[in-house]
Image 1 (cartoon, rainbow, N blue to C red):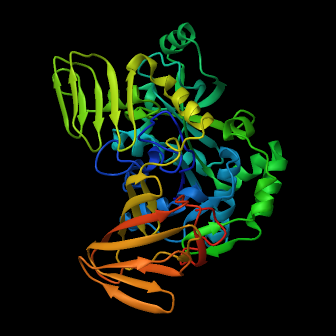
Image 2 (cartoon, rainbow, N blue to C red):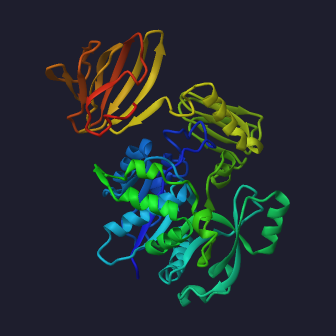
Length: 490
């Protein structure tokens, strides 16, 4: 059997699950369904397949989130491909295919299993069986897409119409009578339908939801891309011609990739190739594209409520309630989504959850930041929480992971007080270095070079009090940085 390399697309910064999902911390990095984040769950469900280490594709802003979550799973191995800018799925997959061919053993042409990082799949055994059924087809040169067996007439998904049945070469899997255990020539890709059309699709039994998951040989995808979109192919070949090693990341040539046209794999390749095949998948799939879809897949109480966090309810039913840091109480309400985070509250009727994006658009238009970041912000060294602010002051709770270090930096417009709450802080202040233990503090004058490090085995927690005329994050001048962020905006 050919080696299989999972390609996990972890880009995107969707707005449909705001305020929990933000541009800098989108849903693929959240624990929405269980103890793992959606990215980690995507990696973990591959355990029953004989796969190589996954290649994860993400953007610059999310690279440390991806690295940390892969590190927790023991799957971090210089396997994160950074897109200099979003160019849709066809260029992203081309980067992965070219990288896979470069890094594989001489003469090896691996299969690429392309997955999204933000989907939920309930039946992992059924998922595994569908992939195994597709492998012989991909080995034979087919470009396989996985069609989700529809459970209702959904208007929010694209559809795939099946044509003639094809033989997979796995008799043990194809011997059953169910049409869902077969594979078919792709007859047609269709856009999101209206309600009446979707009902017709469901009744016909010939249509599947377009999952955005694929399996094919790296060389076959590249050959078809070159045939149908030679401009995308050429730009991606040029982009991987110069790869810059950077910690756990694969950096491609920025200028070459920025010149690449944007297109989806469906439009660029799958709708044009003569070798597209659809393998049905009936595995409890959801793209978790809205708060109502998250309610649908979640475990409910006797009244149909899904309650996460500190929630009390009375005479209420069919609600999704998420409380991050405060008590949320419901009385006599029905069919609502209520989401409380440290800096925002959302209340929306489940029938109108698609309009949450209108709030996000309004935040962007008004120059606010709540669509981009949470009050609690993650950094490669740890995180900080802006717990209070006012005129000329701001208070943060800072957490530094064991062995990590903030950049050597200075500020033009603010001074800082640091008070250690727990752990040990190693402080660089000008020419001096010293340690601070619990309940000890220090003062960072305006304009003084300084750095903070955790030399201990437990997380370092401290309170930072900033004072000055300008307190925004862009008042940081980096002099040295362990994470290669010297040229980045903060």
